[in-house]
View 1 (cartoon, rainbow, N blue to C red):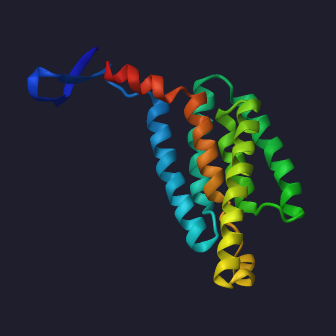
View 2 (cartoon, helix red, strand yellow):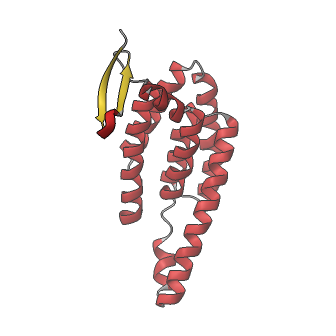
View 3 (cartoon, rainbow, N blue to C red):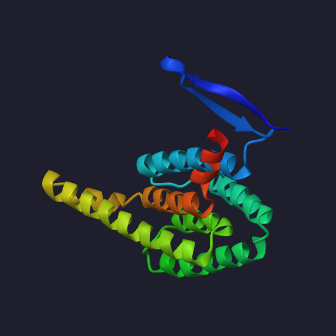
Length: 181
């Protein structure tokens, strides 16, 4: 059932239509939900230095559903398990927190190996910038010891980098654009 609704009607007769076929693509809906969950994770990690397990579970379930939808669940599950094992080593040597490792693993089912590598690279770059900013703040404010004790909210760079990778790997921009035509 192809239909369209008017979402904008401007002066001079310009009109924008939203075409739909009785559903919005699953990937767009899941991406929007995961984005809101990601915002929640960023806020709680910044304020409490904790990543809620229920939020991580929701991300994992949504992305596992997408992986099943794309017939790549087995590779995604293998990737998630691999990320957990590597992340456990990073947790033991106190590079990442357990919540950070679980959050990265939750993004893995719907991504490719190269997507996870790019996400990890982005996470390291953004995390390094965040750490440098916190270090600069600690030195300038004379609260370096307090800043070090509190730690870095690594959930923020994780969410930003992996949502960006997910956006491109699921081709969300083109899917949304096709809805607008």
